[in-house]
Length: 452
Ligand SMILES: [Cu+2]
Image 1 (cartoon, rainbow, N blue to C red):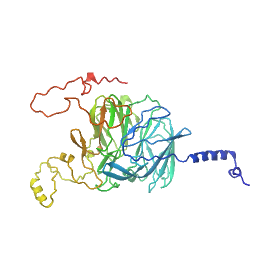
Image 2: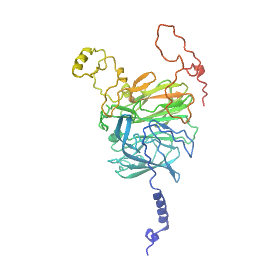
Image 3: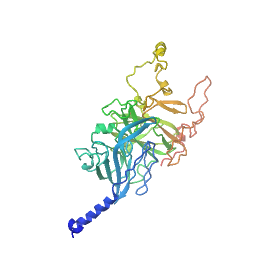
Protein backbone atom coordinates (compact mmCIF):
# COMPACT_ATOMS: atom_id res chain seq x y z
CA UNK A 1 0.00 0.00 0.00
CA UNK A 2 1.34 3.39 -0.92
CA UNK A 3 1.06 5.87 1.89
CA UNK A 4 0.52 9.57 1.58
CA UNK A 5 3.96 10.06 3.22
CA UNK A 6 5.65 7.99 0.47
CA UNK A 7 4.03 10.02 -2.28
CA UNK A 8 4.94 13.34 -0.68
CA UNK A 9 8.39 11.92 0.22
CA UNK A 10 9.53 13.96 3.19
CA UNK A 11 8.61 15.50 6.52
CA UNK A 12 9.38 19.06 5.45
CA UNK A 13 7.07 18.83 2.47
CA UNK A 14 4.39 17.32 4.66
CA UNK A 15 4.64 20.26 7.03
CA UNK A 16 4.34 22.59 4.09
CA UNK A 17 1.41 20.60 2.79
CA UNK A 18 -0.23 20.83 6.20
CA UNK A 19 0.17 24.59 6.16
CA UNK A 20 -1.25 24.73 2.68
CA UNK A 21 -4.19 22.55 3.76
CA UNK A 22 -4.91 24.81 6.68
CA UNK A 23 -4.88 27.94 4.51
CA UNK A 24 -6.96 26.18 1.91
CA UNK A 25 -9.51 25.18 4.53
CA UNK A 26 -9.87 28.84 5.46
CA UNK A 27 -10.44 29.70 1.82
CA UNK A 28 -10.61 33.17 0.45
CA UNK A 29 -11.63 35.92 2.84
CA UNK A 30 -15.27 36.85 2.54
CA UNK A 31 -15.89 39.50 -0.11
CA UNK A 32 -18.65 41.67 1.35
CA UNK A 33 -20.91 43.50 -1.08
CA UNK A 34 -22.49 46.89 -0.35
CA UNK A 35 -26.02 47.40 -1.63
CA UNK A 36 -26.54 50.98 -0.48
CA UNK A 37 -25.03 54.17 -1.94
CA UNK A 38 -25.46 55.92 1.45
CA UNK A 39 -22.52 56.91 3.63
CA UNK A 40 -21.88 54.08 6.11
CA UNK A 41 -20.84 54.75 9.70
CA UNK A 42 -17.06 54.55 10.13
CA UNK A 43 -15.68 51.27 11.52
CA UNK A 44 -13.75 51.87 14.75
CA UNK A 45 -10.76 49.55 15.32
CA UNK A 46 -11.46 46.56 17.59
CA UNK A 47 -7.79 45.60 18.05
CA UNK A 48 -4.33 47.02 17.44
CA UNK A 49 -3.46 50.73 17.64
CA UNK A 50 -6.35 53.11 18.11
CA UNK A 51 -7.25 55.45 15.27
CA UNK A 52 -10.08 57.71 14.14
CA UNK A 53 -11.64 55.82 11.20
CA UNK A 54 -12.54 57.68 8.02
CA UNK A 55 -16.07 58.41 6.81
CA UNK A 56 -16.30 57.83 3.04
CA UNK A 57 -18.92 60.07 1.41
CA UNK A 58 -21.58 57.76 -0.07
CA UNK A 59 -19.21 54.91 0.60
CA UNK A 60 -18.01 52.31 3.06
CA UNK A 61 -14.95 50.59 4.51
CA UNK A 62 -13.99 47.05 3.50
CA UNK A 63 -14.00 44.65 6.48
CA UNK A 64 -10.94 42.41 6.89
CA UNK A 65 -9.81 39.34 8.80
CA UNK A 66 -6.45 38.64 10.43
CA UNK A 67 -4.59 35.44 9.49
CA UNK A 68 -1.21 34.81 11.16
CA UNK A 69 -0.83 38.52 11.89
CA UNK A 70 -1.60 39.53 8.30
CA UNK A 71 -4.66 41.68 7.52
CA UNK A 72 -6.52 40.03 4.67
CA UNK A 73 -8.92 41.84 2.36
CA UNK A 74 -10.86 40.61 -0.65
CA UNK A 75 -11.63 42.93 -3.55
CA UNK A 76 -13.87 41.70 -6.35
CA UNK A 77 -13.61 43.63 -9.62
CA UNK A 78 -17.04 43.39 -11.25
CA UNK A 79 -19.81 45.19 -13.17
CA UNK A 80 -22.00 47.18 -10.77
CA UNK A 81 -25.13 49.28 -10.88
CA UNK A 82 -24.45 52.56 -9.10
CA UNK A 83 -27.17 55.03 -8.23
CA UNK A 84 -25.57 58.38 -9.09
CA UNK A 85 -28.67 60.14 -7.80
CA UNK A 86 -32.25 58.98 -7.20
CA UNK A 87 -33.66 58.62 -10.72
CA UNK A 88 -30.30 57.97 -12.33
CA UNK A 89 -28.41 54.70 -12.24
CA UNK A 90 -25.21 54.02 -14.15
CA UNK A 91 -23.93 50.66 -15.33
CA UNK A 92 -20.33 50.85 -14.19
CA UNK A 93 -17.41 48.64 -13.29
CA UNK A 94 -16.32 48.74 -9.67
CA UNK A 95 -15.46 46.63 -6.68
CA UNK A 96 -17.66 44.67 -4.25
CA UNK A 97 -20.93 46.01 -5.57
CA UNK A 98 -20.09 49.70 -5.78
CA UNK A 99 -18.16 52.34 -7.69
CA UNK A 100 -15.94 53.64 -6.23
CA UNK A 101 -14.83 50.49 -4.47
CA UNK A 102 -14.79 50.30 -0.68
CA UNK A 103 -12.21 52.28 1.27
CA UNK A 104 -9.43 50.09 2.64
CA UNK A 105 -8.16 51.10 6.09
CA UNK A 106 -5.13 49.72 7.91
CA UNK A 107 -2.33 50.91 10.18
CA UNK A 108 1.29 51.80 9.49
CA UNK A 109 3.42 48.70 10.13
CA UNK A 110 0.64 46.27 9.18
CA UNK A 111 1.26 43.55 6.63
CA UNK A 112 -1.67 43.26 4.26
CA UNK A 113 -2.70 40.47 1.88
CA UNK A 114 -5.25 41.61 -0.65
CA UNK A 115 -6.99 39.00 -2.78
CA UNK A 116 -8.31 40.44 -6.05
CA UNK A 117 -10.90 38.39 -7.92
CA UNK A 118 -11.66 39.42 -11.47
CA UNK A 119 -15.30 39.09 -12.55
CA UNK A 120 -14.94 41.54 -15.44
CA UNK A 121 -15.09 40.39 -19.08
CA UNK A 122 -11.43 41.40 -19.58
CA UNK A 123 -8.21 41.24 -17.58
CA UNK A 124 -7.44 43.77 -14.86
CA UNK A 125 -4.86 44.57 -12.15
CA UNK A 126 -4.78 46.79 -9.08
CA UNK A 127 -2.21 49.54 -8.74
CA UNK A 128 -1.68 50.92 -5.21
CA UNK A 129 -1.23 54.61 -5.95
CA UNK A 130 1.38 56.32 -3.77
CA UNK A 131 2.44 53.29 -1.77
CA UNK A 132 5.98 52.17 -1.06
CA UNK A 133 6.02 48.44 -1.89
CA UNK A 134 7.95 45.70 -3.72
CA UNK A 135 8.03 46.39 -7.46
CA UNK A 136 6.17 43.17 -8.27
CA UNK A 137 3.20 44.31 -6.16
CA UNK A 138 2.77 47.60 -8.06
CA UNK A 139 0.05 46.22 -10.33
CA UNK A 140 1.13 47.41 -13.79
CA UNK A 141 -0.03 44.95 -16.46
CA UNK A 142 2.81 43.63 -18.56
CA UNK A 143 5.45 45.61 -16.63
CA UNK A 144 5.24 44.09 -13.14
CA UNK A 145 2.71 41.26 -13.57
CA UNK A 146 0.48 39.60 -16.14
CA UNK A 147 -3.12 40.90 -16.16
CA UNK A 148 -5.50 38.99 -13.88
CA UNK A 149 -7.61 36.98 -16.37
CA UNK A 150 -11.40 36.93 -16.00
CA UNK A 151 -12.40 34.39 -13.37
CA UNK A 152 -9.01 34.33 -11.63
CA UNK A 153 -7.88 35.60 -8.23
CA UNK A 154 -4.45 37.16 -7.66
CA UNK A 155 -2.81 38.02 -4.34
CA UNK A 156 -1.04 41.26 -3.45
CA UNK A 157 0.95 41.18 -0.22
CA UNK A 158 3.16 43.90 1.26
CA UNK A 159 4.05 45.84 4.40
CA UNK A 160 2.52 49.27 4.97
CA UNK A 161 5.69 51.19 5.65
CA UNK A 162 4.19 54.68 5.96
CA UNK A 163 0.93 56.32 6.96
CA UNK A 164 -1.10 58.60 4.72
CA UNK A 165 -3.79 58.69 2.05
CA UNK A 166 -3.48 56.54 -1.04
CA UNK A 167 -5.68 55.34 -3.89
CA UNK A 168 -6.17 52.14 -5.82
CA UNK A 169 -7.21 51.66 -9.44
CA UNK A 170 -6.49 49.33 -12.37
CA UNK A 171 -3.34 49.64 -14.47
CA UNK A 172 -4.84 47.51 -17.27
CA UNK A 173 -6.89 48.94 -20.13
CA UNK A 174 -6.74 51.93 -17.86
CA UNK A 175 -8.64 54.46 -19.97
CA UNK A 176 -11.66 52.16 -20.19
CA UNK A 177 -11.57 50.75 -16.68
CA UNK A 178 -11.21 54.12 -14.95
CA UNK A 179 -13.83 55.73 -17.22
CA UNK A 180 -16.11 52.87 -16.08
CA UNK A 181 -15.57 53.80 -12.42
CA UNK A 182 -12.88 51.47 -11.07
CA UNK A 183 -11.15 53.23 -8.20
CA UNK A 184 -11.02 53.46 -4.42
CA UNK A 185 -9.17 54.98 -1.48
CA UNK A 186 -6.58 53.32 0.76
CA UNK A 187 -6.03 54.95 4.16
CA UNK A 188 -3.03 54.03 6.31
CA UNK A 189 -3.42 55.40 9.83
CA UNK A 190 -0.31 56.39 11.83
CA UNK A 191 0.99 53.78 14.28
CA UNK A 192 1.12 56.52 16.95
CA UNK A 193 -2.56 57.30 17.72
CA UNK A 194 -1.64 60.84 18.81
CA UNK A 195 0.08 61.74 15.50
CA UNK A 196 -2.11 63.95 13.26
CA UNK A 197 -5.16 62.95 15.31
CA UNK A 198 -8.48 64.43 14.25
CA UNK A 199 -12.06 64.08 15.50
CA UNK A 200 -13.67 63.66 12.05
CA UNK A 201 -11.92 62.36 8.96
CA UNK A 202 -13.80 62.49 5.65
CA UNK A 203 -12.62 60.98 2.39
CA UNK A 204 -13.91 61.00 -1.17
CA UNK A 205 -12.77 60.72 -4.77
CA UNK A 206 -13.50 63.17 -7.56
CA UNK A 207 -14.64 61.20 -10.59
CA UNK A 208 -16.45 61.99 -13.83
CA UNK A 209 -18.61 60.18 -16.38
CA UNK A 210 -19.98 60.91 -19.82
CA UNK A 211 -23.44 59.35 -19.90
CA UNK A 212 -25.98 60.66 -22.38
CA UNK A 213 -29.37 61.49 -20.79
CA UNK A 214 -31.55 58.39 -20.98
CA UNK A 215 -28.65 55.94 -21.27
CA UNK A 216 -26.74 53.94 -18.64
CA UNK A 217 -23.20 53.17 -19.77
CA UNK A 218 -20.42 55.80 -19.77
CA UNK A 219 -18.82 56.71 -23.09
CA UNK A 220 -15.29 55.53 -22.41
CA UNK A 221 -13.64 57.43 -25.30
CA UNK A 222 -14.46 60.85 -23.82
CA UNK A 223 -11.30 62.73 -22.90
CA UNK A 224 -12.42 66.07 -21.45
CA UNK A 225 -16.08 66.78 -22.17
CA UNK A 226 -17.70 64.78 -19.37
CA UNK A 227 -21.26 65.67 -18.35
CA UNK A 228 -21.42 64.19 -14.83
CA UNK A 229 -18.94 65.46 -12.25
CA UNK A 230 -19.09 63.44 -9.06
CA UNK A 231 -17.95 63.19 -5.49
CA UNK A 232 -17.56 59.40 -5.17
CA UNK A 233 -19.84 58.55 -8.12
CA UNK A 234 -22.65 60.68 -6.69
CA UNK A 235 -24.28 63.96 -7.75
CA UNK A 236 -25.56 66.80 -5.56
CA UNK A 237 -28.12 66.89 -3.95
CA UNK A 238 -27.58 63.13 -3.50
CA UNK A 239 -24.10 63.57 -1.99
CA UNK A 240 -23.82 62.99 1.80
CA UNK A 241 -23.32 66.13 3.86
CA UNK A 242 -20.27 66.30 6.13
CA UNK A 243 -21.69 66.52 9.69
CA UNK A 244 -19.19 67.98 12.17
CA UNK A 245 -19.44 68.79 15.89
CA UNK A 246 -18.56 72.33 16.95
CA UNK A 247 -14.83 72.58 17.76
CA UNK A 248 -13.95 69.22 16.17
CA UNK A 249 -10.59 68.98 14.48
CA UNK A 250 -11.60 67.95 10.95
CA UNK A 251 -9.68 66.43 8.05
CA UNK A 252 -11.05 66.21 4.50
CA UNK A 253 -9.12 63.96 2.09
CA UNK A 254 -9.89 64.42 -1.61
CA UNK A 255 -8.45 62.27 -4.40
CA UNK A 256 -8.78 63.19 -8.08
CA UNK A 257 -9.05 60.42 -10.70
CA UNK A 258 -10.74 62.53 -13.40
CA UNK A 259 -9.08 63.94 -16.52
CA UNK A 260 -8.94 67.54 -15.23
CA UNK A 261 -8.03 69.49 -12.09
CA UNK A 262 -10.66 70.55 -9.55
CA UNK A 263 -10.27 73.59 -7.29
CA UNK A 264 -12.19 72.41 -4.22
CA UNK A 265 -13.51 75.41 -2.30
CA UNK A 266 -14.97 75.32 1.20
CA UNK A 267 -16.86 78.25 2.65
CA UNK A 268 -16.60 79.74 6.13
CA UNK A 269 -13.04 78.71 7.01
CA UNK A 270 -9.44 78.98 6.07
CA UNK A 271 -7.45 75.76 6.24
CA UNK A 272 -4.14 74.12 5.38
CA UNK A 273 -3.06 71.12 3.33
CA UNK A 274 -1.64 68.64 5.83
CA UNK A 275 -1.19 65.62 3.56
CA UNK A 276 -0.70 64.73 -0.08
CA UNK A 277 -0.50 61.26 -1.59
CA UNK A 278 3.26 61.70 -1.09
CA UNK A 279 2.90 61.92 2.69
CA UNK A 280 2.27 64.35 5.55
CA UNK A 281 3.08 67.99 4.95
CA UNK A 282 5.50 69.45 7.51
CA UNK A 283 3.94 72.35 9.51
CA UNK A 284 6.56 74.83 8.25
CA UNK A 285 5.61 74.00 4.64
CA UNK A 286 1.88 74.82 4.97
CA UNK A 287 0.03 78.00 4.08
CA UNK A 288 -3.59 79.12 4.49
CA UNK A 289 -6.05 78.47 1.66
CA UNK A 290 -9.77 78.61 1.00
CA UNK A 291 -9.63 76.70 -2.31
CA UNK A 292 -7.31 73.80 -2.91
CA UNK A 293 -6.55 72.69 -6.43
CA UNK A 294 -6.56 68.92 -6.65
CA UNK A 295 -4.39 67.96 -9.63
CA UNK A 296 -5.18 64.98 -11.84
CA UNK A 297 -3.98 61.74 -10.29
CA UNK A 298 -3.33 63.34 -6.90
CA UNK A 299 -4.73 63.62 -3.37
CA UNK A 300 -4.87 66.57 -1.03
CA UNK A 301 -6.01 66.45 2.60
CA UNK A 302 -6.76 69.64 4.49
CA UNK A 303 -7.61 70.30 8.12
CA UNK A 304 -9.44 72.93 10.15
CA UNK A 305 -10.89 73.49 13.60
CA UNK A 306 -14.69 73.62 13.29
CA UNK A 307 -15.17 76.85 15.22
CA UNK A 308 -17.96 78.38 13.17
CA UNK A 309 -21.39 76.72 13.20
CA UNK A 310 -23.44 76.73 10.02
CA UNK A 311 -24.16 75.07 6.69
CA UNK A 312 -20.99 75.70 4.76
CA UNK A 313 -20.85 74.86 1.06
CA UNK A 314 -18.01 72.68 -0.22
CA UNK A 315 -17.74 72.44 -4.01
CA UNK A 316 -15.56 72.43 -7.08
CA UNK A 317 -15.03 76.04 -8.15
CA UNK A 318 -15.27 75.27 -11.87
CA UNK A 319 -18.89 76.34 -12.22
CA UNK A 320 -19.58 73.81 -14.99
CA UNK A 321 -18.67 71.12 -12.46
CA UNK A 322 -21.59 72.11 -10.20
CA UNK A 323 -24.05 71.40 -13.00
CA UNK A 324 -25.53 67.99 -13.68
CA UNK A 325 -26.06 66.46 -17.13
CA UNK A 326 -26.21 69.26 -19.67
CA UNK A 327 -25.42 69.98 -23.28
CA UNK A 328 -22.67 72.55 -23.79
CA UNK A 329 -23.63 73.60 -27.33
CA UNK A 330 -26.55 75.79 -26.17
CA UNK A 331 -26.50 79.42 -27.39
CA UNK A 332 -26.72 82.20 -24.79
CA UNK A 333 -30.04 84.09 -24.79
CA UNK A 334 -29.41 86.52 -21.93
CA UNK A 335 -30.90 89.89 -22.92
CA UNK A 336 -32.80 88.42 -25.88
CA UNK A 337 -36.56 89.11 -25.89
CA UNK A 338 -38.10 85.81 -26.99
CA UNK A 339 -41.74 86.78 -26.25
CA UNK A 340 -42.79 87.02 -29.87
CA UNK A 341 -41.00 83.90 -31.07
CA UNK A 342 -42.32 81.94 -28.05
CA UNK A 343 -45.88 83.01 -28.91
CA UNK A 344 -45.44 81.72 -32.46
CA UNK A 345 -43.87 78.40 -31.39
CA UNK A 346 -46.69 77.78 -28.86
CA UNK A 347 -49.19 77.71 -31.73
CA UNK A 348 -47.63 74.40 -32.82
CA UNK A 349 -46.06 73.24 -29.52
CA UNK A 350 -48.26 74.43 -26.59
CA UNK A 351 -45.78 73.34 -23.83
CA UNK A 352 -42.88 75.32 -25.33
CA UNK A 353 -40.97 77.20 -22.64
CA UNK A 354 -38.35 79.79 -23.70
CA UNK A 355 -35.26 79.42 -21.53
CA UNK A 356 -32.48 81.57 -20.31
CA UNK A 357 -33.27 85.15 -21.33
CA UNK A 358 -32.83 86.27 -17.69
CA UNK A 359 -29.94 83.90 -16.93
CA UNK A 360 -30.50 80.24 -16.10
CA UNK A 361 -31.46 80.38 -12.40
CA UNK A 362 -35.09 79.68 -13.31
CA UNK A 363 -34.03 76.12 -14.09
CA UNK A 364 -33.42 75.44 -10.38
CA UNK A 365 -37.16 75.35 -9.70
CA UNK A 366 -38.39 74.37 -13.15
CA UNK A 367 -40.37 71.14 -13.38
CA UNK A 368 -39.70 69.90 -16.88
CA UNK A 369 -40.32 66.41 -18.23
CA UNK A 370 -36.93 64.64 -18.25
CA UNK A 371 -35.93 61.59 -20.27
CA UNK A 372 -35.70 58.38 -18.22
CA UNK A 373 -32.52 57.92 -16.22
CA UNK A 374 -31.13 61.41 -16.01
CA UNK A 375 -30.99 64.24 -13.48
CA UNK A 376 -31.91 67.91 -13.51
CA UNK A 377 -29.11 70.24 -14.54
CA UNK A 378 -29.30 72.05 -11.20
CA UNK A 379 -31.17 70.86 -8.20
CA UNK A 380 -31.32 70.77 -4.41
CA UNK A 381 -33.59 72.71 -2.11
CA UNK A 382 -32.39 74.48 1.02
CA UNK A 383 -34.40 76.21 3.71
CA UNK A 384 -34.46 79.40 1.60
CA UNK A 385 -35.34 77.85 -1.78
CA UNK A 386 -33.61 76.13 -4.68
CA UNK A 387 -29.82 75.88 -4.26
CA UNK A 388 -29.26 75.82 -8.04
CA UNK A 389 -26.30 73.49 -7.87
CA UNK A 390 -25.54 69.94 -8.95
CA UNK A 391 -22.65 67.53 -9.36
CA UNK A 392 -19.57 68.38 -7.24
CA UNK A 393 -21.26 70.12 -4.32
CA UNK A 394 -22.01 69.25 -0.71
CA UNK A 395 -22.45 70.92 2.68
CA UNK A 396 -20.23 70.87 5.77
CA UNK A 397 -22.74 71.04 8.65
CA UNK A 398 -21.08 72.32 11.82
CA UNK A 399 -23.33 71.88 14.84
CA UNK A 400 -23.12 72.19 18.59
CA UNK A 401 -23.55 68.92 20.49
CA UNK A 402 -23.24 66.29 17.74
CA UNK A 403 -22.21 62.93 19.27
CA UNK A 404 -18.75 61.77 18.18
CA UNK A 405 -20.17 58.83 16.25
CA UNK A 406 -23.16 60.70 14.79
CA UNK A 407 -22.86 61.05 11.01
CA UNK A 408 -26.56 61.52 10.28
CA UNK A 409 -27.69 64.64 8.42
CA UNK A 410 -28.52 67.18 11.17
CA UNK A 411 -30.89 69.11 8.90
CA UNK A 412 -30.66 72.82 8.10
CA UNK A 413 -28.78 75.29 10.29
CA UNK A 414 -30.91 77.36 12.67
CA UNK A 415 -29.50 80.82 12.15
CA UNK A 416 -29.37 82.99 15.28
CA UNK A 417 -31.73 85.92 14.99
CA UNK A 418 -30.35 88.83 13.01
CA UNK A 419 -27.56 86.87 11.27
CA UNK A 420 -29.17 86.23 7.90
CA UNK A 421 -28.92 88.63 4.96
CA UNK A 422 -32.25 90.41 4.52
CA UNK A 423 -34.06 92.82 2.28
CA UNK A 424 -33.52 96.51 3.02
CA UNK A 425 -36.88 98.21 3.37
CA UNK A 426 -35.72 101.74 4.11
CA UNK A 427 -35.44 101.36 7.89
CA UNK A 428 -32.18 101.92 9.71
CA UNK A 429 -30.58 98.47 10.14
CA UNK A 430 -30.24 97.19 13.73
CA UNK A 431 -26.62 96.14 14.39
CA UNK A 432 -26.11 92.36 14.71
CA UNK A 433 -25.07 91.66 18.29
CA UNK A 434 -21.53 90.37 18.56
CA UNK A 435 -19.91 88.19 21.21
CA UNK A 436 -22.41 85.38 20.77
CA UNK A 437 -20.58 82.13 20.01
CA UNK A 438 -23.34 81.10 17.65
CA UNK A 439 -22.85 84.07 15.37
CA UNK A 440 -19.74 84.75 13.36
CA UNK A 441 -17.58 85.53 16.38
CA UNK A 442 -15.02 88.33 16.59
CA UNK A 443 -11.47 87.13 17.24
CA UNK A 444 -11.76 87.39 21.04
CA UNK A 445 -14.74 85.04 21.32
CA UNK A 446 -13.91 81.98 19.23
CA UNK A 447 -16.59 79.92 20.92
CA UNK A 448 -14.39 79.09 23.89
CA UNK A 449 -12.31 76.71 21.78
CA UNK A 450 -9.15 75.53 23.48
CA UNK A 451 -6.58 74.05 21.10
CA UNK A 452 -5.62 70.43 21.82
CU1 LIG B 1 -14.23 70.52 -10.96
